[in-house]
Structure formats: structure tokens, C-alpha cells
Length: 324
Image (cartoon, rainbow, N blue to C red):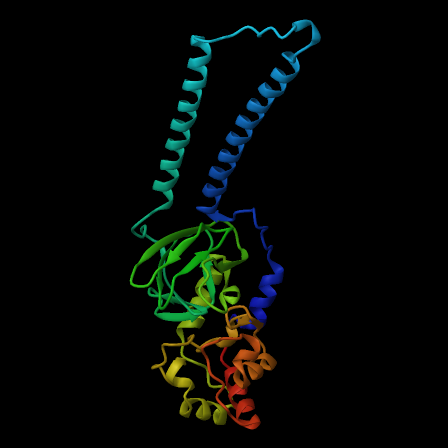
């Protein structure tokens, strides 16, 4: 079982790659292409500046010139061919490389054997549905290493942008439109993504953590996510209170209520390391603060304060803390 403590331990046990260290395709292809463009532009800059400096030094005026005009090279076929052919060749080569990268990156259909994930952007959290496994989670994407993940990207409200620099490029989530993205992780670890399109007050706190597992570890995690919510001893009163408040109108807890669609699925809440899409660490103290006043942690959050008593908040937080 992968609870919050287990995931936190895994996070510290595995290496977190640097920003410019791709650990998946197509991020590697994007970095290689960007490096080629930078190297090409740097080469052009060095050649042009080198010729300019050489010309300034070699052909500078002196008192012996008496204002005479230097030798002219009008009509030089060699020079005209050089500054015409070389740029054309550079443009053609870069154009072919660009077209090849676009074709490789922009896949419209899921390859055979890939993992299908439906990603829906909300203000301000990520809904993650695994259709092949039959469950939905939020804000933390889990993927197996060395297997292509095919993501279908949608938005529930405004334009968002899905960006995982070490795994892939940016792709927009647009209302009433389906965009796609694929990722093929090459090593295990944890990376952090971000909504890269301003989408409202809490845009900066719309984070996405991605955990890449060994295949058998991913399957164990998926099996845990498939089961219904655990009923731990001693939380029955909190469970009943949660079930009869407005919480169930927004949140699904499989086995308790499955009508909520506006907020994250809480069936396995404590298997996640953060609350509110990365705004706070996922522990009981922050759960109490979140239930008491969501705007204290995430100003502008769509979740209202439920105006429960201190005892009721403790009961609900105790129940939620049992959902691993």
C-alpha cells in the first residue's frame, strides 16, 4: 500500500532531476532541438562578429590613406553566392529538423500498449482519470517507467496549460476542445509540473506532481486506487457527518457518495503528498485548517468554509485522514 508516508519516503529516496535534465521523451527531443538552434545561432554570431572585428582591425583608416576609398568588391560572385547559399542551406536544414520533431511529438492516437490518462484542468486543481483502471484521482500523476502514457487534455472552465519541463513540452487545455500529449519516462523519480497559462487568482498554486514508478510498483499503486474507501475503526461518526453535509455535493468518496464532481475525488486522499494542488503538505493539521477556512491556505479557492463546529471539524478531518 502506498500511503502519504510511503510516497514521501519514495520522494526522498529517488533522485529529483534538474530542470534542464529531461527524464522522458519528448522532453529529450525538445532539449536536443533547442540545443541545435542555440548552437546554430551561436555559430552564426561568432562568424559574423569575428568578420566584423577582423574588418575593423584589418581595414582601419590611417593617416597614410589621405582619405582614399578602399578597394571595392562590387559584383563579386563568390561573396554573393556565399551569403545566399549558406543561409538557404541553414534554413532548409533547420526546417527539415523542425518538421521531423513536430511529426514525432504530435501524435493524435494512442500507441498500442500505452497508458491512457484523461487530464481535466479546473480552477485550480488537476483531475486525473485512468480509464483503463476505472478510477479518478487528483493533483498527483503516477506513471510507469519505460511505457508510453497518452494524455487527453481538457478544461472544465478557463484555458490552462499543462507543463512538465523534464517530461514534455507545454500543451494548452481549452474548454470544449480535446488536446493530446504523450510521455515516455526513462527513469524513476519525481518531477513537478505547473499550469503555465494564467487562469485566475490561484494560478501559481496549480501544481502537479508526477511520480514515475517501476512497472510492478505502479501496478500496486493502481490496485490500491481501484478499491473503495477504507472504513477505519473509530471514524464512523466523522464518516456519517461527511456524508450528510454539503461536502458530498462536490467530492466523491467511493463507497460513501459518488455524486460529487466539482471537487477532487477524496477516496484515497491520504495517498497524496499535498493538499490543494500543492498549496500545503497533506497532514491532519493542514486538513483541519483547510476544512476550517480554505481561503487561509489558498485565497480565492472555490471550496467554501462549511461553518462546522470545532468538534465537527475534528471528526471530519479524522475521517479524511483515514482515507489512504
